[in-house]
Image (cartoon, rainbow, N blue to C red):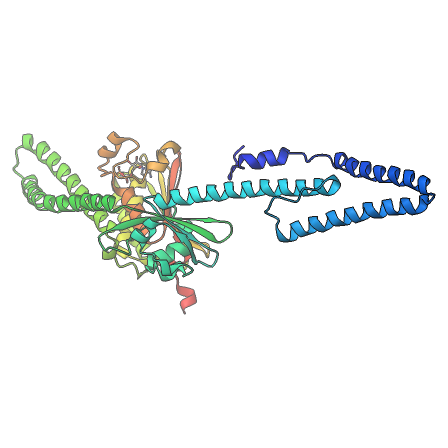
Length: 455
Ligand code: ADP
């Protein structure tokens, strides 16, 4: 069985120990009393005052017991940690047992203190910052790394952690731990060039354990990757525009040699794919740099839904699906119109692409008072549940050949995920192979703008 705090050996021994039987010691007292009585009887018969002699014998025994009681009391009250006075009989047994149990307690205590010291010194030696925060959000204890990474100083003991780590994102994280399952990355308080990843765990009610480590290297590498993708996408844009311009001109010529026509058509479709890929990469990189996106526009959902529906109908010409629009909410959305329209349109084109001809696709907008739901339901090929967790990864495809055939870039759902993340929303997918899928973008209440309640 798992023991969170292993019991020190001595404590286990202590539990097993049986104290010596009091009866053995009581026998010593009885023997002494018997000796007094015998002597008193003999003397009493000799001098002819048996009663008086017996009285003296009992009185002497009583005085001896009182003296022992006095010594016991004196020891317990004044010198409990000294070796106890040497007493016989029942008082001696009592002293011995009290002394032994006290000694064992002291050994257990010192073992515990040693254990705590060892735990503490190993925490002090850690490269990760460790901070203990009490129920009132005050700093109780921290290690050296916390001073280095988070700038906590000696005078901060007992101060509220939120007055030391004051970044709004940290305050948000502190108040809503459940919304940040992976913790939070913030700039180090001691250096603008360093980044720390913070993870907090609650324990014993409202107390918290904060652990932070330096992720500057990872941050720099991540930034390099983003810059690289961003730069290369920008660099590819101009040559691609030139290429597709020329190819279009050639393809549009009426007297083009039919032998070349097929080649130009293929070149055109491939440059379109590359263009789509470059545009998706640029959009993703813009989404990662969240500051560049204004997320507080009020988006009129009826008009956005109608526009999406019209676009879907145009795209649907080659597929011949039945398209339905189902709006059942008075709420508008608060967010970035371009990004949301692009995410919704990705979900719709996917539904159209991955549904065999003649299927049914329903685009919906609902709310239940707490959440808003943008849904796209199709009767298409569906997705095996094993693929669902990885679906929003970049370039993840269930069937690569099919995806390429349909002109997909493999970035559509990654874009959807990022756009939703920017709006504190998330994607839910339900799907059954060969039966169809439902993609649901779930928006929290504070992203909904209830037109009725505003009038
Ligand atoms: P792609 O450009 O390949 O469509 P996405 O990121 O949009 O890339 O989608 C990732 C993968 O998820 C697709 O390759 C496809 O296998 C699967 N997928 C997405 N939407 C659907 C859908 N509505 N029905 C079935 N599979 C889908």
